[in-house]
Length: 147
Image (cartoon, rainbow, N blue to C red; front, side):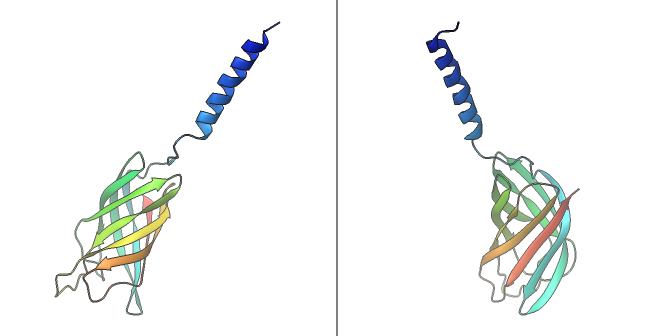
């Protein structure tokens, strides 16, 4: 018959491992690393627009970095722009750099985004802009699929 001390020690070990597994750091079950393509939808001065977009993202732990580029004409200028953010469990929050395509004042800015951070389809919606531009979008959504 096992001693009470041995049983208590075994229960303690099992309970400790169980707690450690359930309370470990949250991480995304799917990495955002890879190439993505889709659309960037926006509204500027009450007019809606849409541009094709590609993104190349890298994820290390919860940190996400990369670039995006619009591949069709519209409000956002073409060229590689930075993407930075974090993923916790299944949510992304971060920023993109942007410049308008018609840019006589040489303005630039950042847009804050949030949305899902797992799976093969991303839907990120802007939650605010910080820019020196006289005209900025009131809404922007990026919808992209993994390539």
